[in-house]
Image (cartoon, rainbow, N blue to C red; front, side, top):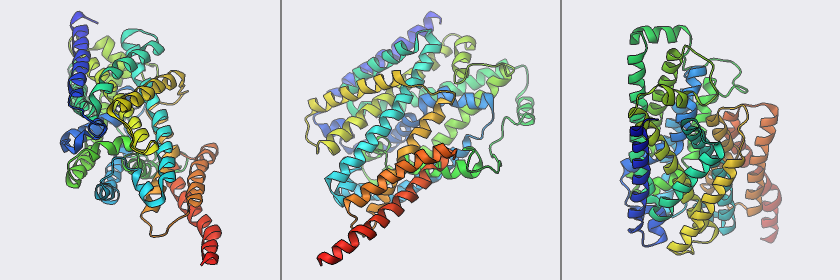
Length: 469
C-alpha cells in the first residue's frame, strides 16, 4: 500500500475510536448504553441494520459467489424483503406495546422468567457463533490486505473494537455503522466504475458476454429444491423465514429498531433495510462478475477474490478508502454484537440489575469470548457467508416458534415449551445429516416446535389440569 492508503486507514480507525469515546460521555445509565434512550432516527437505524447483517460477509464472500458462479444469491434477498414486512406486521407491534428493553421479555411476560432466560441463552449461543464467523471474515480481509497471520488480524480487530464499544454504547455503534455503511457501499460502486474503465469492452458487450456465460442468472430452476439451497423456492422461502427470524427474534437486529421513537419509525427502518440489502447484494455481485471478466476467470482462493483485486489492482487512495471503510464497518458490526449480547445478559439473565459500569464489564467479557471463538473456527470448504447463515438456521426456528406460541391464548406449561424448543433444534441436526438444504431448516424446526409443544401440553398437562379441577 502507498502512504496515502495507510494514512486514510489510520485516520478512519482513529476517528472511530474518538467518536466512540466522545459518545461515551452521554451515557448516564444502562438504558442509554443499550437503547440510546429511544431517540435513534429511523434512517440511522435502517442503515445500521444493513451494516450489521451484511457488511463484512458481503465484502468477503458475495463477490466471490458471482466470480465463481452467478447471481442466484439474490433469491435470498427477495425473501428478506417479504420477511421484514412480516416482522413489521406481526412482531414489532407486540414489542412496542409492552415497551420492552429486550424482546425476550415478551416470553417472560407470557410464560415466566425461566423461559425468558432460556430464550435469551439460545440467542446468546447463536449470536456468539454467528459473530465469531464475522470476526473470522474481517480477519480474512485484513490478512489479504496486510499479509499478517489470520490470528493476529482477528486480535487487532477485536482490540480496536473494544476501545469505542465499551465507552460509546449503542448510540456510537449505530451512528458509526450508518456512516461506515455509506462509505463501504460507495467503495463498492467506485470499484465497479474503475472496472468498467479498465476492461477493454463497453458495458453492453460485457453484459452480453456475462449473460452468454450464464453468470447473471438470478432464478435457479433446479428441481432439487430440498437439497439445493439456491433453487428459487428453497432460497425465497428460506430467505423469508431467515429474515423473519433474524430480524424478528434475534435481539441484535431488533435492538436497533427498539431504539426508534415509535412503531411507525421502527417499521420504516425494518422494511427499508430489506430493500437496501437487495441493492447492496446487487452491487457486490456485479463487482464480482466484473472482476471475473477483468481477471479472465483466473482461479483464485475462495472468499479472497475481491480483497485480492483491491490490493493488487485498485489505485492508491481508492484502495485505502475502500479498505478503511470495510475495516471500520467490520469493527462497528462486531461492536453491535458485543452490545446486544451484553444487553440480553443484563436484561434477561440478570433481570435488568446492573449499573453502567457493570454493563461495560459484561461487554468486555463478550468481546473477549468472541475473539477466542473466532480464532478456533474453521469454515471448511464452504463460503463464509453460507456458513454464517447456516449457523443461524440451527436455532432461529426454535426462537421463532416460541414467539408465535406467545401469541396463542393457550397457557402452555414450561415443560411443553422446553420440549418443543429442544425438539426444534434437534431436528435440524437430523436434517443436516439427511442432506436437506439449510434454507429449509427454519420452516421444519418451527413446525416441529409448534407440534411438539402443543402435543406434549395436550397429552401430559391438559389431563392433569382437568383432574385438579
